[in-house]
Amino acid sequence: MTTAAVRRSNVVSPVSLTFMTEVSTSELLVAASRGDQVAWNTLVDRYARLVWSVIRGFRLDEATAGDVSQTVWLRLVEHLERIRDPEKLASWLATTARNEAIRTKRIYERTVPTAVEFQIADSAPPLDAGLLASERDQAVAEALATLSDDCQQLLRAVTADPPLDYETIAEMLDRPIGSIGPTRARCLEKLRRALEADQRELGEADRGKESKQ
Image (cartoon, rainbow, N blue to C red; front, side, top):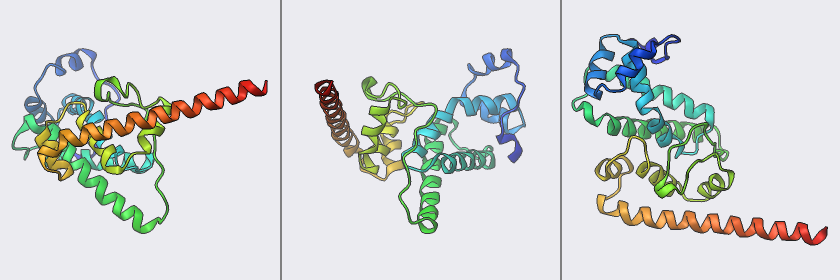
């Protein structure tokens, strides 16, 4: 697998893709390391949402986030034959995505001393108990953006797809494992309060419009 192979092939057999979705991550890594483009595409399909969700937690603009995502996949190409525990690839990708996002954000902040805008991606993973059925919902996106970076990163991590265990999340976010659950609950409560406040403001605005009619 070469660096150029990070880009998805334009023609992929539907039959092959159907078969590949049933193949284990370990088998996909072996096949991809041997240059199998379908295996590589399947790996990307399987873990792209996870990588993207971790990166988005750092409030990078869409173009920069895309560059970071590309870098993460390049790192995987470089390490295809050196992944010690293939079944923990999700953890490896999440940690790599976080490290690359932190590195890129530090460079960005040194060169561009302005606030980084919060961007909404085209695809969004599900969030706790359906609370964030889709980040395309403007009200939810705005409420999420009001939370601290720590809360945003934690909520994205605990709802990643494929899911991450608390041990991986703790390592990725550099937090004690015992703090993940309680902090998650506090962040979700803050998100709910932000949503309720937004709904009240919208209700008051609507009533104001009605009274002027």
